[in-house]
Image (cartoon, rainbow, N blue to C red; front, top):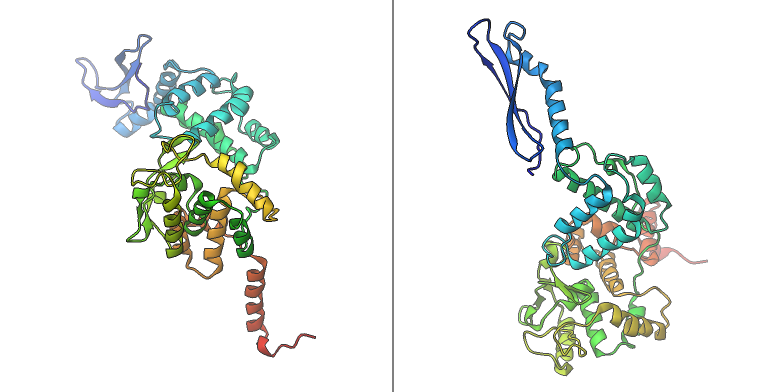
Length: 391
């Protein structure tokens, strides 16, 4: 059955053999068998409506009724759970990663199974209330960012229903739902001393991985997606072409993420040192191939995190919550801390939005904030700190 769309129809004046001409309104509608049929209705005579504009005004209510009936007549899901199943089949098919990555699908499925469907599955599509959804989200014992993602996912489900013609354009109740995505805690970064202490505890493979992450800002999924043929040792850059998450190869997070990344001489030297000892060093091999899988796939990030990186951080005396993403946060903070132009930082971090660079990944240390504050005091009070004597 074809999907309905809002239609204006056509309005024409037609002569009659006896009496004045009449205005005739024509439109199409889908019958109970799914067939499109032409319909028409006489609106009035040209004496009643001397101009087409007046006749058009007379059919506005009729047009709304026709379109509303068209939406209601369209066969489609009546309950929210049925809409979810249709969304799964069209937007989250297992064999298609064009629209969403495997990691995104995994998060979506988890939200649907554990939160959205258990609470809202039995609701009919027109029974939702924005306030009710907002209150429910506020009661979920999740991080603000997770609640915001659930809110956005529910909105996507309703937009799916709108796109398929099962609900009207103005019938997305999530559009008015407010939810904060503010972080509850600032992501951890490493000082230079902590970084070196950690690296002293890492084996060769993880030290090479950490060097790439900490000196390029690559996400761990992008680091594991590198092959030796992606490293241009002559130009000193890496071509980031793919991402690997939980053994699944996919595209990078954004188009901006696929830009070439510069590699420092020290990073190149560390990579070359690793290549000299790894069993998988041919051009088509993964940089950080899994021995257990005979080099056919990279290692799993979470396994390396739990068995190698976090124990190494503990041995180094680091009490912060350490993950592979800690290196990316550290890289961004240091780029900003040492006076780099924010646009350069954005491009090195490969963020689509500059606000992400500044609001999420840049964390000024207390010493740098104190130094910046002192420079303002110097100007305001004409202070020469070289002459200040500490009592």
